[in-house]
Image: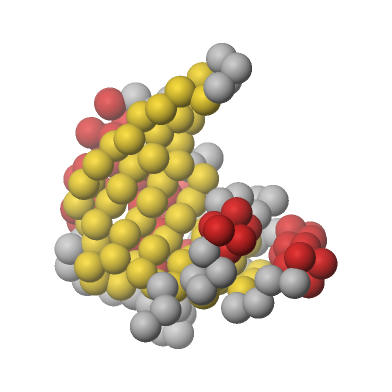
Length: 169
């Protein structure tokens, strides 16, 4: 069937919009807690004539407990503003077993990833790859971290809104 992708905390629509343009067959779902962003993105999709995109105004914590979305996506992406352990709690529950959570991070330390490994395992994930690359024009190092969903996420994750951030796994 079609590949389903969920972009958590979409910001200005990166990477979901370029991915949708490059791979028009992907079914894209965007979730963001800021309604202004969702409105902007819906307008953008309309202007660009992109179909098969759904936008949801919601907190990732609530969205991840919603039976319509939990364990429903082949790929979940996020630009990592939060710590890896926090981000994983918001994203891994949305990935279907055998699918991937793809985190995009600015130069993240090996230390942070090691710290997050226990959290990721708790959520049913496993770090498969950490791709590091340099942005052009001295813009610095970036990482794409590939996490495979090996088993179902325990029911209690993600915890209530705000809690993953306050008490990281």
